[in-house]
Length: 308
Image 1 (cartoon, rainbow, N blue to C red):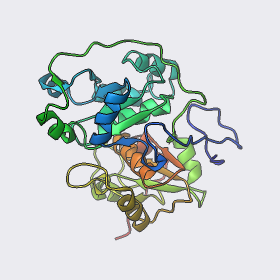
Image 2 (image 1 turned 45 degrees about the vertical axis):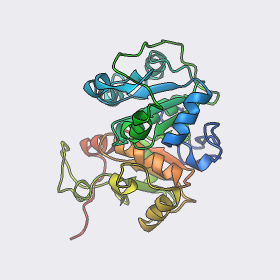
Image 3 (image 1 turned 60 degrees about the horizontal axis):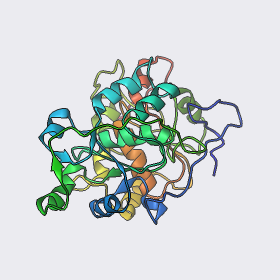
């Protein structure tokens, strides 16, 4: 299926450009659940086939104990580099090499886990699937969710760094994941398209402009609807069920038959919101990864604040 009003950032932008959303993923029988894997599925998957396991917690946590075989990836550095002009997500060759250097060849399934906050795992998931890794999922609830299996010795924990098998990364045919990458120009154009929905997954304070973070201006992108990312997670830090997420998105004002662009401050929460939207059944999802940090810094981009 195509989205005629937008093209991915890495594609040539023309008036009739479209972005392809690939359906189906062999990690899951049900395509509505793709992008996320439960701990029970994780155990079965590891027993069934070789996978690339990526731990994006901080280095101290990784060294204190990680799933045996997991490769450590510095999520903070990936964040910095993916937002820097010299190495952002438009630099395809740079990121393909970087992805291959952590052992992802483009064909083997990849499972990413973090410390349970889900945002950094979602960030790495988004980057990997954007560049064409074929099967990438986030472990729901992160490393803490594995505690029962670890306590029962069903999962081996290691404190020794795992050996990285550097490979040549070859993106899947068609290049690009289910969730596309939107840029500032495309978001600006979307402001005049009544069908496009913009999801601001920052806090209420950021949305209102009372919490500036490091931005020169506070507020939100015009017509953006606020749905803070923590509302998408349950008390255990896992994504809520498909049905709960569908209800939450609907109550926030989103329609499944219309495209959605997610954004936050700097990409992590926006990636999680995109993951949640996909789980909720939305099939036209893009991530404005540069997010409000870029938007607020550009004085030509309009910013609104809620009317008192």
